[in-house]
Image 1 (tube, chains in turn yellow, cyan):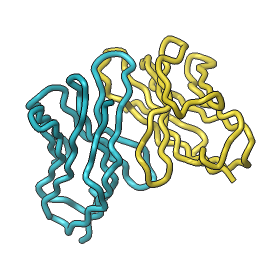
Image 2 (cartoon, helix red, strand yellow):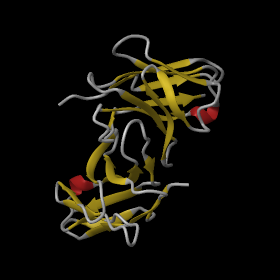
Image 3 (cartoon, helix red, strand yellow):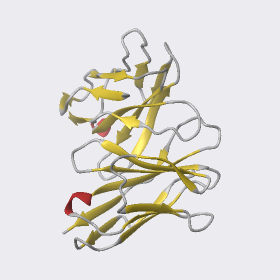
Image 4 (cartoon, chains in turn cyan, orange):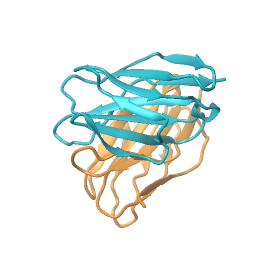
Length: 114
Length: 113
C-alpha cells in the first residue's frame, strides 16, 4: 500500500538552528500538508500546499516556517531559527486528486529543541 | 469557528469490554467526519469516516454514525482488545480540494487483559 515517508524520524537541535524536515508524499497525490503535535496535545494544522504554492496556513505558521516542493517527489518543512516551543512531532500528509479529503499521514518526525 | 470536542481520557477498560468515545462537532456547513488512530510510536491512521448525515463508518469492529441532529460522531466497539490501546482522534473536514482536517484533542484508550 502506498505510504507517506518522512525523514528524519527524530532530530535533536540547538535553539536558533535551522531544521529541515522532509516528506515524500504518495506519488499521485496533489495536496500536501504539515501538521504538528506537541507532546500530549492535539494535532494542529500548520499549512496546506497545492500547485506549488501555499493554499492555507495557520497562525502557528509564522515567518520562521517555510515549505517547498523542490522536485517532483519531496515536500519539505523548514524552520529557520528553532525555538524551544517548536519541539513537537511533525506530520506530513497528502490527499488524492479526487478531493475525497482522506489524508494519508506519514509516521512523523520528532523534533527536540534544546 | 469549526471545532471538535472529544471526551477526555484516559479511558481504561478490560479486554472484551464495550467502548464508547464521545465526539461532538461545531461546523458552519456539513463536514465529513473521521476517526483517526495513533498507536504508540506511530503516525496517524484513518480508522473510519462518514461523509453525510446518518452514514455509518466502520472498520476493524469499530463503528461511528454521523448524527446531524446531535452534531455527534461517537466511536463504539463491542469488545475491545489489548491491541486497541492507542490514542483516538475525532476530526472533521469539508469536501473538496485542500481543506484541512480539524482534530479533537484525542482520547487515550488503555485496554488491560
